[in-house]
Image (cartoon, rainbow, N blue to C red; front, side):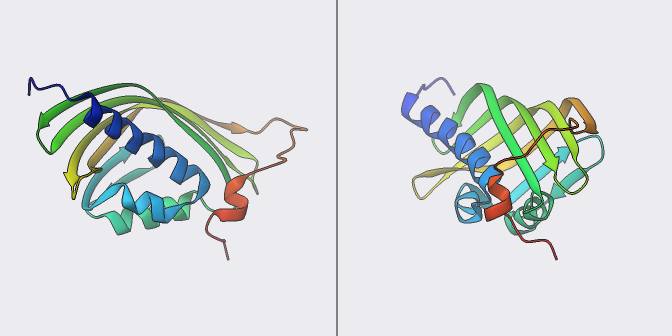
Length: 161
């Protein structure tokens, strides 16, 4: 689509920024508001593959993986957003993430390329298809002597029984 709309592009960038914030803080009400009900995901890392055809199963998987025994940070960079219609768009993002499993002191550190499809529903842009493949992923023991002095998911993430 040749029509350039800076307001829509900025709104789509904000969706992805809120997505990362919601995930890292365990804010699943916000997380849910950013995704369409019929969300399709295909997320592949070194030791996982999240394929879902609806929002609720995907949220359940993320809440279980990034729980109160996790510390995490996610960053999205260099967005390439293309409006494909009045209520549709596609985006490519480079992302970096880091997650610590606190009980085992194991870190997963990586990066990848996200491919998103967005749909505007009731005036709000949402992610309707989301896929990524890793560029780099490493898993290693956290630094000996390092201290975790704050981790938000410890307070807000799903409790582990």
